[in-house]
Image 1: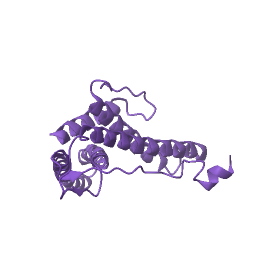
Image 2 (image 1 turned 135 degrees about the vertical axis):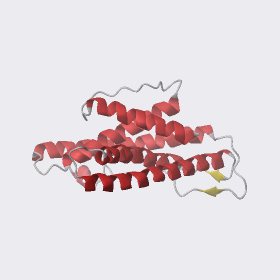
Image 3 (image 1 turned 90 degrees about the horizontal axis):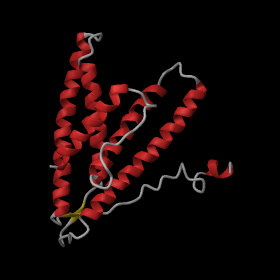
Image 4 (image 1 turned 120 degrees about the vertical axis):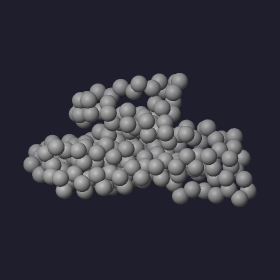
Amino acid sequence: MFSDKANKIFEEVIEKYHEIDSVDQEFENPYDAETDLLEHLLYRKCWIDTVQWHYEDIIRDQNIDPEAALKLKRQIDASNQDRTDMVEFIDSYFLEKYKEVEPKKEATINSESPAWAIDRLSILALKIYHMNEEANREDASQEHQMKCKTKLEVLLEQRVDLSTAINQLLDDISEGEKYMKVYKQMKMYNDEELNPVLRNNK
């Protein structure tokens, strides 16, 4: 099943990141884009999400230097753009994979594309990893640990449900029961022609 592969890669990414646990560490993709394109895209996607997760932690430091915070905000903006780009690359992969499938007359469109559902699955993997850390943090109170274990159980259930839904969506697309229609996100805030602040500073 697709989601089994995706979840395994996401766990691999998160474990690899935490070996060094630094947003500044070098990135190396173990999957070749020529021979393992889908795995390559999934690994890259989750790495972006993992780094950004930790960006978001750092920027919430109440004592962060203002200049450092501004630099980090720029990095978060760039990461958000990378995240969106990777989602579109993954959707392009599926569009190519299923291009020969003729949708049935009664076929319907899904509310989100496969890649945006996969985006949620990647973020969910990060929530599970860090909630598990909190549930087993030795310097935390027993009450804290129990609350986090309860939340972890919900997250694990959510992963099963989301994984099942993604597998079903891909099956439906492959059988012509649903069809893909992908819209570019058309983010405006990074575009010098669309963001008036950037345009006026040119």
